[in-house]
Image (tube, rainbow over all chains, first blue to last red; front, side, top):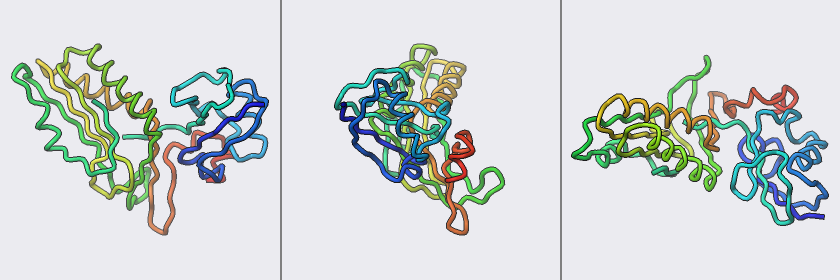
Length: 80
Length: 146
């Protein structure tokens, strides 16, 4: 099992009901982690407009997870 | 230089740093909070950022602008927190030998920042309602809950 901390921003924080959570997971990738979290309906079912960061860097959804990673699922940007 | 700030953006002061004896052109852009969006009256805005990643990505954009266009310098400052109508939310400044490169680089920076930097905007309307911008692109199931 891996200990992963997940950070939520803006609309995803509202939807999830928290700014961050730490959980133990067997998810191999960020994609598997998202699917696991999405089962309770507190994340969008469609992730095609979300971006992913691991340890403060943009990463691909297939990126492998290691215990201690900080994951952030990022809703569509709207700066400017 | 790319910065995130919680303080009011002093556009005139920032512009003062863009002068150089080798620059014949200084182009600046101010993105300000307007009082309407998509048919609704907007009372105020709130911006938040994933600050560590935003600063990294913003710095990359500034570097790219310097490589792509014949400019001397580019800067961008984005404000976060609660902003009122008329406040400057983002400021971009570019100085270059000639105007064409300065205009192009300025537009490049603002367009890239809007699409690539993890910053989010919430609009507040009359009646104590609010809305995260660009949430409509998420699934209908999710957006119904916002």
